[in-house]
Length: 345
Image (cartoon, rainbow, N blue to C red; front, side):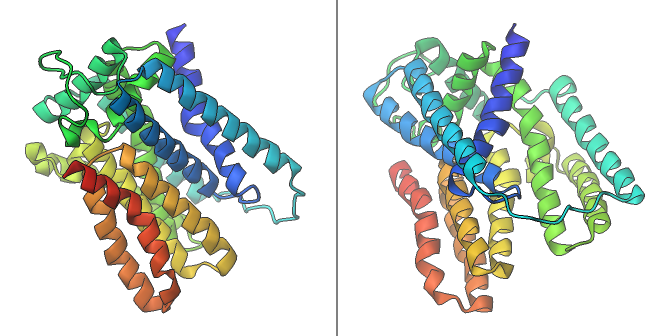
């Protein structure tokens, strides 16, 4: 029964409902942007709710139910809006050639093998990661959101340890445990990698496809090479915890998600903005905002990294495109992270 609940919960939370939320804002979009937008929005709403319930010493289970209701309503509205849209004629995307199918199979097999190795054959022990995992377990047992110290079990004041309790990723893992019936430690270290590691490589493919436009064979070859590079770099880095090592050994942690999912995704969206026409740019800006606001759930590291990334790559974007009127958009996109950084100081 738990296996069935887990499969259903993960399918809804990470795939079906995000796409529905994305369709609410961009019903005609047929790329991955609605799904990315939906994930970002769901994370942003969860983080806002978690801060409120953290301050009020509220119930984790009540907040989880409230978040689910809002998520379901938004997704239902999105699917309804997409269904009401008059479909426009569009060309059918060409199928994969034989070489491309072979390369895709190799890339997928490597991702699957690495994911299974991480889930079934890897152990990672570190006080920092153990504290995050303990926060998820403590929130689940006490039915609160990061208000009890996992080391002592004592009730603490709000924001007693900002870098650990302000980002709601551990509470999110506890909420998934409530929905699936699995233990939070199992959700955190065993179930989430099934989504996180393929997502990281999917974003690497998006970056490769951006540089090798209309050349899927080149992009798939680049993805395979990047998968090999990650494994080699992780082997050489060892316990020095380079981003590649995080992806191979503990992709569930906030820092690993920041390095291997959020920052590459922000970069990809900025690169997409540069070549987009005005109408698609609006959709990209909405998606970038959702990602940057939603990442406040994941790690306090992103409160500082994302504004720097926006300033650095956004600066290059503005210099190349001369779209100086979009400076306020970059400011607005990064505002949530800056605000959370102030809270953590």
